[in-house]
Length: 440
Image 1: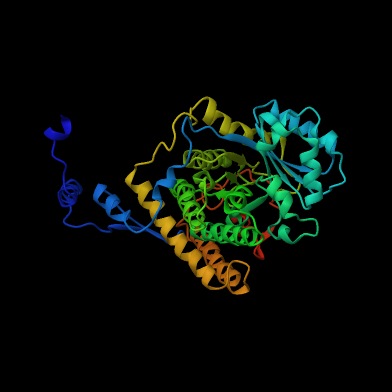
Image 2: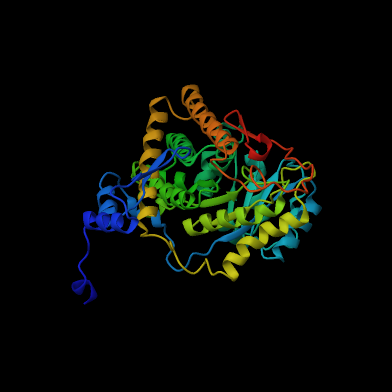
């Protein structure tokens, strides 16, 4: 009866009351322009805004995801495998400390898999293997129990379809997520959410096109893909990005007319990286990693990797930073109960608006890439690189002008700074990863 007794105010009535409360005749600015993200958001949003914005994009219900019981995710740790026994010891150590997902980056494919896998029950955890050959992939699948296969993902280079040992029949017989569409690497170059999303969808389209062209049904082809997203410090934008990605993924897959609706369910890993992390004032990273992990979890990812903040330092990840990275999502799950509620801020007018805006604008950017010949074309890559470089310049300038504040980096510097620096670099699309602390 409450909804009958209390009249719902119109947008104009709401604005009138807001002006009265603010003691002003007009709003100074009715739109918030996030110039780095390329998104304008109303300073206030009502149900009328939300209902009118849903009319021009299909499949928006996909944004909430396919979880039905809880919001559980897997807490992961990345291990670079140079020595099988050392990597196994590290994996066992952190499995006992609460990790239930492992990311093995294997560069030497002559290592002993039996020694690497010793004592690990892969059927009870999630695992990603970064490998470089199909022969080695088959060896991994042969040595692991078949009950573990449903919990395995691979991270092949995207040109793996053209490797000499590639076999379409193998994919048909073993439809597992072999191809990682890695938006994390793009995000770490300084790309904004629009650039990351358009890149991911364009790469997914390229792989799906190649696989279906080789004769794989779309349902099998989609099962061969999973996605890795990077999470930045724009709290609600990052939540909206994950939800927008699911909408984009559904839209892309539906264009192929899959037989099974489950083919539109994306597997999403989220990574907390290093763009805004500090080595000179390391304790500030605790809050940054926590809020970024919260964005990923609220967005509803499957796997979460909080990378140690000093992993790119000269001496690599310290034991302290690694344990911190493991414990942050454990506290959010075990003590803050973030795993209990699905899409907890879904329905927020601001979140829904940003989800829809990101989905629409990213889809438009994706279509631009397709019109240039797809993500593999030099024209599309050059255009995306130029866009990312402009975004990076805006990020750096905003810090220098102190329009953007990072405590310990460009404001309230630690008087006891150490001389540690991020030394390790990687690249994507020909662009090096961005570390803002190194730019100030």
